[in-house]
Image 1: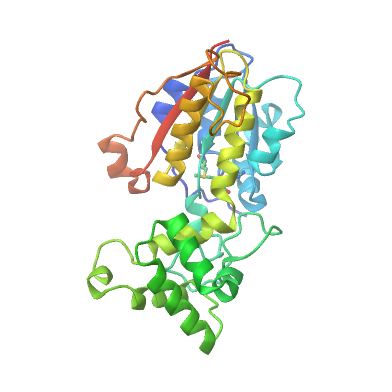
Image 2: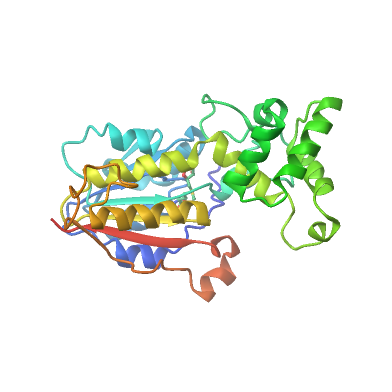
Length: 310
Ligand SMILES: C[S@@+](CC[C@H](N)C(=O)[O-])C[C@H]1O[C@@H](n2cnc3c(N)ncnc32)[C@H](O)[C@@H]1O
């Protein structure tokens, strides 16, 4: 089978500039290896680097394995949730670099057939790990109206959450909602007419909210950061690329609380991390105009880096 790569790694030059390994024999953990774009660049640039590549999605992990064959003696692939991996890391060597490039890959939208995009007639699944938890279809067809509206508001910041939840419940009482296109049409019919004419599809936030809920994305990010900060080596760096404000808020507060030694988002005993970390990116870095022109999907990326100093 041909290994067609569809995802362009975002902010590659900034990531390479800010996540330099301290020594030749560093260990990097790519917690969201996807199709392996970032991983390949690091392996090519640093001939002694060892990389552990993690992804929740076993299908995409196979694509990374195929792509990174030339480096197979320096890569280990693990099909896991990064939050769980960091909690139970077995390696006796601490990672010097941890990279999290959050969310989904282009592969998920274009090739996975799991209903991540409202443009395709695919079943509403949206699970990254095929054997885990609830599908989007279960949520849409079974949650109460209130729970649906709360979910759309909390994870999509959708201002028409209540109207959309009303319409979903009305329509599912007639017939089960099965596909991404069916759901997108329901959302479109629920929002005021002026929102149907905007450049952004009116179902964008609903789809974002559902996939975040299905994959526990925000909880995994929060607990993944806590565990990552406990295992990162002295001098090591944690780099996170987020794609929307809900994610970035978690990263920003976690970094600040960690540096201050506050227990608010870190859940560490007070002051345990005070003076141990510094924030390398006072403000998040963003892709430049050239990158956004070449890869419009990068436009909302925000990159932050935390370094363990002692
Ligand atoms: C934006 S893509 C990464 C793209 C990759 N950096 C590249 O250059 O090809 C994000 C990846 O993270 C994976 N992912 C999302 N949440 C995860 C989690 N909690 N644990 C492990 N992998 C996760 C997704 O399956 C997806 O493949």
